[in-house]
Amino acid sequence: MPRVFFLNGPNANLYGLDKSGTYGSESFASIQARCEGHATQLGLSLDFRQSNHEGVLVDWIQEARLDADAIIINAAGLTYSSIPILDALLAFDGPIIEAHMSNIWKRESFRHHSYVSKAATGVIAGLGAMGYRLALTAVAELLEA
Ligand code: DHK
Image 1 (cartoon, rainbow, N blue to C red):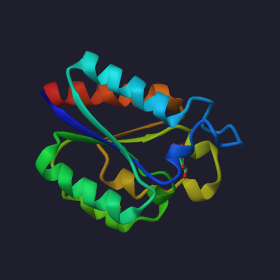
Image 2 (cartoon, rainbow, N blue to C red):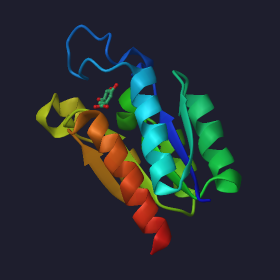
Image 3 (tube, protein in one colour):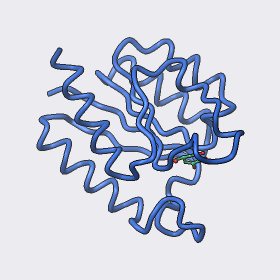
């Protein structure tokens, strides 16, 4: 069964609690559970993780080189600053989907430049948690191709 790492960056654990409402009302735990259900339907083994720490995310991306066939990543605020995350992603051979809950291009200009995009196979943004499930579908199809 193909193995997918779904890596979430800083503050993703606050989805559903964020008072701005930018990320909707669904909790991170519920989003994770729905992704796990969708992955099962697609025949994917999903490892869904979140960290507030850049180095932990780099370690997980390096782990994926040995243990995963594809990566889905929402590096959250680190998307716009982290060359270490970019370098780790560039060392990964399989498909990489960059996912964002919000449409980052509709937001502040500092969110318009993504380092993650330089390594991503494709980008999904602005569709909330549905985009996460679409990312899983994309990975399933890319791994079949
Ligand atoms: C999530 C975050 O935490 C922000 O820092 C990004 C991203 C956008 C999202 O839309 O999922 O700018």
